[in-house]
Length: 179
Length: 250
Image (tube, rainbow over all chains, first blue to last red; front, side):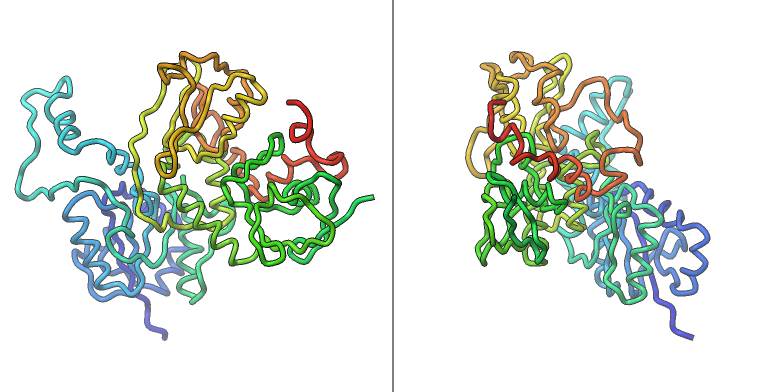
């Protein structure tokens, strides 16, 4: 029997919508699991990557921990894939990029009407937010991109099965989507 | 009786006065484009329609069709360059497709799909471009402007209002509103203007209507831009030597 490929997945500055879309391949999860096994992933609850063939990363980079996790994936994954609009372009979180981070925090935690005794969270366990949100390819080398918010289950299935079959993944009309 | 030229090895016939773009579209052959619009004089600025004619690169929308030309368009060398142009347009502005009401009806997005653009590739600029919501009926979202000047052309040539213009040079070039205040409310722009209909992206929007067409039924959901653009172009049978807007008075 052929050795199974190892896949790791994570969500950084994302909403887990792309992971939901991965689950939307539905019963095709069974043939997928004949070909791959999941390493670090919210689906397995494994907390750190071991060496993997494919890493799927949802979400952009909005804080210091995101950078740390992204580097762990890059170090361990032969092929790193940015999945979804946020990982590919920064997406919705990046819409704060033209605003000053300090004034964002002030508005959300201090001056927003209805917030009594608000304060800007400063627990040392909280990762520090970055000045700007970045797509993944601005921080590490990314091998493939699957755009979409989220990409459909069909698009993810087509992309992964092409890749696993050793073909250049190709999404035709209807599967390539930015929204 | 019409002459013909070669486009990617196939014969394309044309009428006198047609450009390579007009003849190609009329003959059912798509050449990627953004600033070209069948109802307006060609502008030749987006460079997406760049083709090779006898080894030289030319804009298909401005190049007059000539008998015997050998035109190459759908080749990887040119499609690679087109992909780069589209990627630069994406990173230069703020194109957040998931929250854009033009998504699915956007020519920039559809053209990127057509060219299989999977990544912005370059670093995002994330420019700061405030909206103009001053007009009671119309919203301007400058974040998405690709400087095609179609609204500029429509407002001046068809509406006779000169509401829009481009200002600045190079990377600082941007769309402006022709009013002392710089605000759309101080112009005579109206919902019925041609300039309301021509934006290929999501800059000029009708207020109070957003996201009215469900996903799956939008312009480019059903058919790719390469098929849609052919429908929009005057066909060979009724082209009659090119479109009226390009030759006569608007």
